[in-house]
Length: 390
Ligand SMILES: *[C@@H]1O[C@H](CO)[C@@H](O)[C@H](O)[C@H]1NC(C)=O
Ligand SMILES: *[C@@H]1O[C@H](CO)[C@@H](O)[C@H](O)[C@H]1NC(C)=O
Ligand SMILES: *[C@@H]1O[C@H](CO)[C@@H](O)[C@H](O)[C@H]1NC(C)=O
Image 1 (spheres, rainbow, N blue to C red):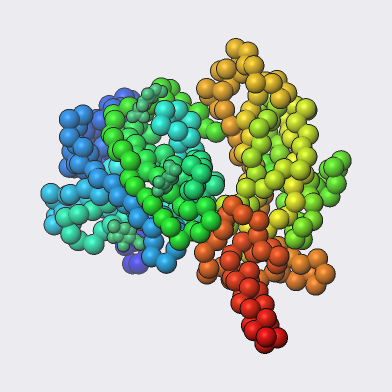
Image 2: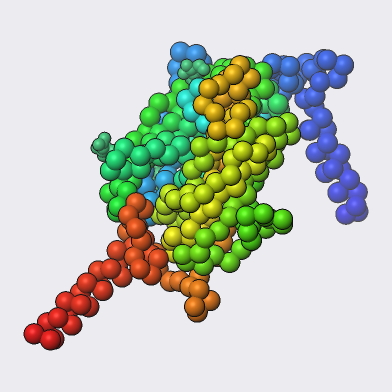
């Protein structure tokens, strides 16, 4: 009996699924064809809410999440059909009845030519009100990875370029490009400034044909300059010098050189640029960097960004490197996350008070921590000592 019931349900499910599918290029009459995809008739209830070339129903906002410097990015729209459970929302994430899927991409810049799928999770604003939308969070430990970093002398400016693809199957219905910036005081992560930039929607992607994904590379630890066996994990000791190997990993790119490297220590509130003591850039497919472990922090990742060039160290670009520059100009390699930076004598993790503001530009304190506390307590400590002696 139960088996029969189960079979009936399975049967029903498969007829529902099969009801709108192309058969010999034909879409059944009770369905609709949209850009070559066969969809249920109510699909138009969802696609209609995307607006058209004249109207853009979406709005964006950005804010720091209370008590952190993590970013909260929210894209909202007003749903006129929000009270009808069968056709509320736009995407499957809001309403399983929908024919539209949603994906988040990050772009390298405002040309929107090079993109990668973002690993940030999309949260759906689905609280039963007419304001609906999509939210995602970028934790500060991912800023160097996700955003474009520049420095205006007093603040780091992190610029984000993102896009939502609304698809039916593999067919793009709409792309929503948006960007924003987050300014963070270099010496105290407490002064913050953020603004949402532009938001535009298009029927076609800006990158015609296939969008290029960014050139991948790996960043590994070496025990010495020869680096016979690079490793994913390493014990990092404060003030030690370590060699890193940055290797191009995308097929076909191993013939290029890596130049103009920039290395950062990253973690929660941490984006400290490393001083490169020495580098070896004159071989194809990889580069070697010698840096000092100049900072202590927990859950730290090292990032190396470099320009891809067809000639070693040269800034004069030939035609092929010009194309390369336009297509996939830079690459970023990341080490795996290291639990902590250790003290060499005790072999123990160095504990910084990570709730404090971080100074990401000046030399860290003697204990390796980029937070002002120890320096301050040392100062007050000596003050007390001095007072005692007087
Ligand atoms: C993000 O911002 C939206 C809109 O301002 C707000 O409703 C939401 O609670 C925020 N989320 C977090 C995690 O701060
Ligand atoms: C599309 O790309 C062109 C040139 O690459 C750029 O000027 C334009 O701003 C881009 N438009 C959008 C909406 O990204
Ligand atoms: C640097 O950027 C910050 C954050 O956007 C801004 O408040 C500040 O005025 C800028 N400073 C200069 C010198 O442009």
